[in-house]
Length: 90
Image (spheres, rainbow, N blue to C red):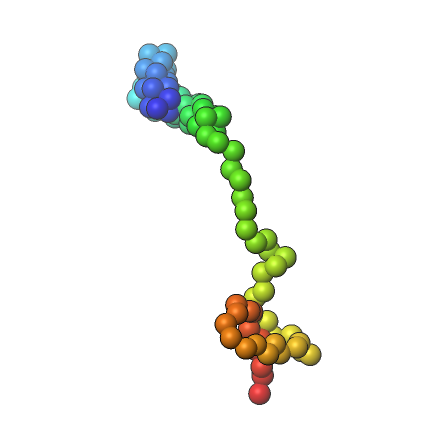
């Protein structure tokens, strides 16, 4: 919300002060600066009101991906289990 308000304020100020010198580009530059400041204010407000993120779950060190390593052990499974695959070159 602050992005919209500060963008409009920046356009008004940029148009008033830069109108004589820069013409319409003063309003555009003021709107850009106001919107940028408003975006920073919005993200600061939202991050301060939101609860802290708690990330749970597996990490990359436990991630097994498909590989083609020479001499790798071929796992033998019974039942169902998620494993990374081994590419066997013939």
